[in-house]
Picture 1: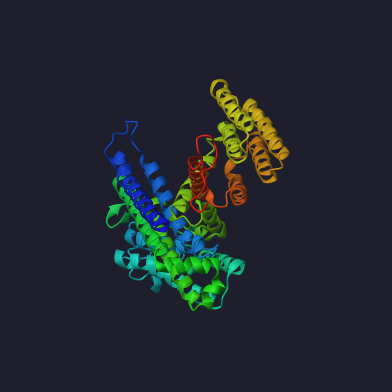
Picture 2 (picture 1 turned 90 degrees about the vertical axis):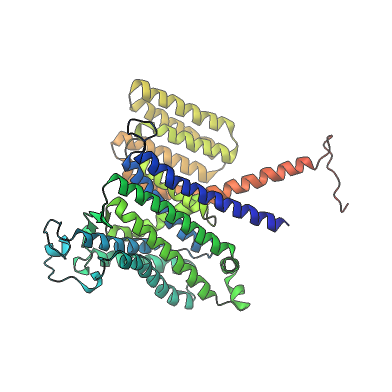
Length: 478
């Protein structure tokens, strides 16, 4: 009975998530296209493109959560499949330029003319057809994942060794795509896109459609992954994750199950890359960088491993934070960041004084910044607040939170004083976030909220089981 109720709740949550994603696919383009720019409800076109990029990242995170959260495959090179899908779309978009480039060559892309290529390489053939390009978006990442997974899983390469090999794979592709004679534009990659299916990629309507397609792709990818993990196949995948040797011992060909999930995940990552490229306008070898693949793992960890929706949410949250903190606009309000950290510390350690200090410091700093326009006074206050918060937490022997908070305090205190952009510290802050999440929220946002909900329900059910005078009622067995 309990299992049936949980299954019904899971199905209801799945359809709620899909309905929300599809609602976003309709609402955002509508507010962009139909609402006048003078209205407060108007969504600018650049925001539409930015949100579309977030949705592509969310689909990528869902694909990684399928293999990491449910199969236990920690891939540190999944960005390679994302980039390969992006390059397949980029090749199609480059072929659509057809004589309107800088060198006006009817067939060769500009970078090939510049590098004195005489003929189109064979692997560029047929990319002027949209259907063929979309087939390659799925086929190229899927085939690479199949070949790699076939050898890796049959050789029973698991754990940290598999993670290292996946990172070596994407690094090898990074070096290859950087070469000019590789035929993919070298360091500059593919850019200067003009049309997709005859529509200008820069127009407002095309960007709105691309955003809607990204949301629909995310909904479909989520449903595919949810269908897999809720099926009998998904139960076997979880068994492989929890006890691979035992699952193999009772007769399952573990390598085939892992290979299936790995290939499906790679195809979804390729689709995400294909939708990402026309919205950002460029694809270059930096997408193969191992740091990008590590960032994906952080998205999933922050949102909640093994939740699918949490992975998508984590991708949106972390990338929004990346946009915010690397844009330079947040610097005057950095004390608010410390206030949030202190508030998070309160939620973990239930210290009301600490939360009050954080919130009060944030309010005071915000008022000073707003009315005085100065930067140094709030910065000094922020440094003092951060140091006080770190000392407070350290006295409670919460070393991890204290160290993270102190580190953030020093970082935020030094950065504006030295005139250094926060963008230079983004990866460093991302590493701190990952350590913080791993130590204090191993289940991520969604998993922690689910635990909190279960605790509240357990507490309420415990209270109901007591009589009005506080004496627990005897159970049926008693």
